[in-house]
Length: 481
Image (tube, rainbow, N blue to C red; front, side, top):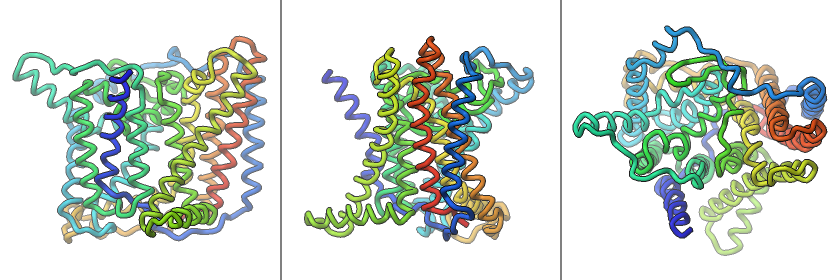
């Protein structure tokens, strides 16, 4: 037990070291002016609730057997797999990832220390953190192919094998009880980096954070093995892989195939820490959205004044208020989910509430996807355009490597009304998808049709609650133009 606690503590401290070394930002998304919603928020809320209720009734009447499983996977033509999984593509993708990692570090350390003129902030916070989410949901685990830490780890293993004639082995087996807790710590650290401290948008601090996190990742891969650490301990690999399970594309043993949408989430292993991980994914976006609205700002101001009452200066009080606010939102998301799970256990029995929370956790992935898509849609559409100019001039020193340094952001790319409908559509579709997954999972766990429907009454309450929250947050932020 003591060894287990020591390992958890070391993993947590190592991942959170990124935040300790690099002060993050509380205004990573404050690039554009807001607009008022084009139609009343109550209409969207009622429409979304009606859609979910109708979906629940339809699922109960028409969905009597589990539909998500491994049996529906179909391989694509062999030539497709041969090309996409071949060595040339693997080397090119891995090298691209390494170059981008190096560009973030070099531009952050040596480039102009102005956010708008440096490659690192826009790439990390917009292109990487947000842009890879829809790519993963559409095309599968894209990040795995471009993961620079994986590329370096595998190259190191190959080099070691060539020199010694023996494969590079992990120093110890990854403990089963550790589950996804290191990955969860990574996402918490990144949330602190992005949403809490001042200064995290500065290129140099992003570069230092990247170096620190790289060291932590290499240490994890050396200790537990490259693939094992990436699958469970490396936060970004776990994060993007969960979204990739929404996709119709899946790789199995070197073969690319097709599966029904969402089916990949049925195969997520119920590992320790997964429900907290999903709560962090949803809670971090919720906290960021709350901070952009008057209600959240008022709460943070009250917390700040309370901290100042205890003798803290304004800067320290602000940091404490933001940390408390982020922790409270994540705890609230997790508590609301666990309340629904407790209701399922009470009416249906079966596995313990703790086990049910793990079993149903993958049903929250579409909700997390909806939150990211809806709340950061405009940031990606507009601010993401800046990467074309910054790619030509990553250091902000006036270079034009690809002839795109003069590219301007087209703020009229999408109208505000279209944005609102896209955002609400994402929220509704995401939550209906979550309800579908929850119903399918209930069919696996409970054989009695009555228990299935009773369990889904509680899960419907969870989905409606998250839908109303998401739409209310959108009405607070009101989109970006």
